[in-house]
Amino acid sequence: MSDVPGAPADLLRSLTRAERLLSRRLGAVLADDALTIEAWRVLCLLADGQGHPMSEVSAEASLPPGTLTKLVDHLVDRNLVFRRIDPMDRRRIRAYLTARGRREHERLDQRVRASLAELGVATDSGLVERLDDLVDRLDPTRRGDRADATGVRR
Image (tube, rainbow, N blue to C red; front, side, top):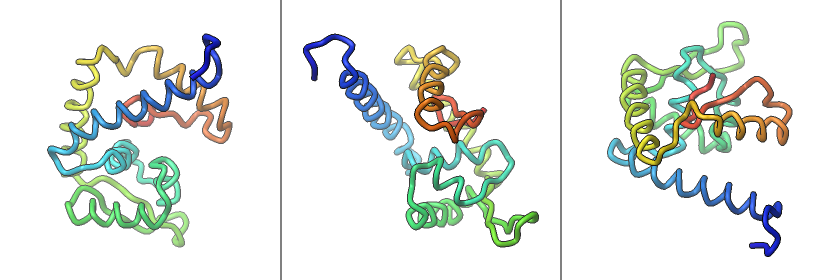
């Protein structure tokens, strides 16, 4: 993209290309179970068992609210997710994994990690932390709210 090594355009190109190729690879892993990358992101977010407001799920999954609602409806139909009124704020809806959703997430997480391991990418490597640091610098509202390479929040 640039004839100057290390140019900012090279960083953008490399990150974009890596994200697209990784999404394609993991999408193929998830396709066996008729799940999309977006659905995987939702399952990963909800895997912490805390339940999350739909607005937070929308932001973390990088989906507009209407699209997220359709996706969560699909996950509810598959008995992977359920929704409840937030007991602290009855105006909000929180999403949670079902028991089946937890089992499916654990099984798929193993498959995703195996696929990453084939590439020599370890989710406990410094790469994830370096990318998280970059995200924190670009979006200060996310500080302390990090996810690993599979999308699982820490």
